Image 1 (cartoon, rainbow, N blue to C red):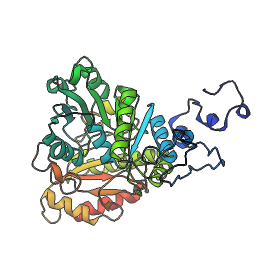
Image 2: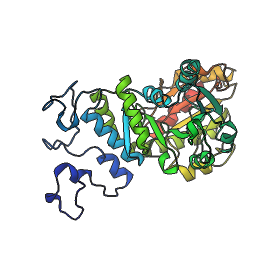
Image 3: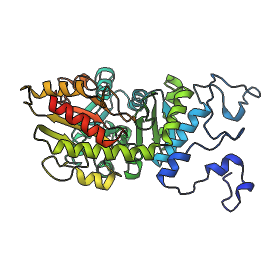
Image 4: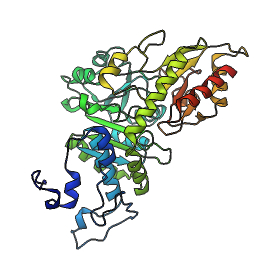
Length: 419
């Protein structure tokens, strides 16, 4: 029974008091969603239920529904509730990694189905659809959904089960108008005569920057390893939806296949969520400063950043960023020009830059408090080499952390000058 909003705090059950929706701002919600004090002890940090099973009160009478940790865990449930609240959705389902979340969502498609996918995605997503699912009869069609949302219509068929994309994309930071895609597919009858489900990977933005469900998406998911966790100390994935049938199916798959996160990993993401709003602001501030620096240099061929609205490197979908996002996020990618003090090719300069920064750590992943630099063609996107999704070999991707902007600018400038 829902709590009585007219009752004072002392009249409401302990847990319900803290679960009541107060219409809080995102910054407040990020601190408190899923973080109500422990009802047994009052602990203000989420308890870590490091257990594999739960004592039952009798045959068919599990205590409060807890049976076995693969099926459910109280720490994991807190994380699922928290991210669902931050995304404005009804149900969250946590998985052992972003890749596991991707794989479980792909299980919604059946042999003979088709999936329309944006033409710039994480290399692991492409690898899954091409090397694992295509041999099983699930066909992926890659379409540029950023240039014109109407492009999706030409790719739809009576077998389309899902429409799937990232925004911003990885690594080119293209933007897709979520509402326009939702409108474009609304009248279509795909697999089983149903409208295709709209799936948005929100990893590059996080709910602090963008909430796809608000714009018509059916499902939003994250590699929670990245901005949600925010400290590069855990691997986790999470899906959020307000469609009960989808949530029920994903929970079944989660239990049947077993791609579940451990309670300590869930705790680490919960801890990270409490500073998400603050971190997102600093990530974006630093990324904007880095983008302006790069855009002002003659030795840079191309800069990708949604916050650049004017000049030679202005983002072609900057208007979408202004309408759909709160800020432009913390990711930047760019291509250095050939030349430099050593007369190198663009790729040679890119490698030299990646290998000579001191604050930007050469590493895969993103979204942590520390700044990272990588060469996607050789690292995160090696699996798309030779395909229509192949990445320019000189492209550099930056994940701008929360260090002092002046130090990051000096570090990158020195690396560029040396290259």
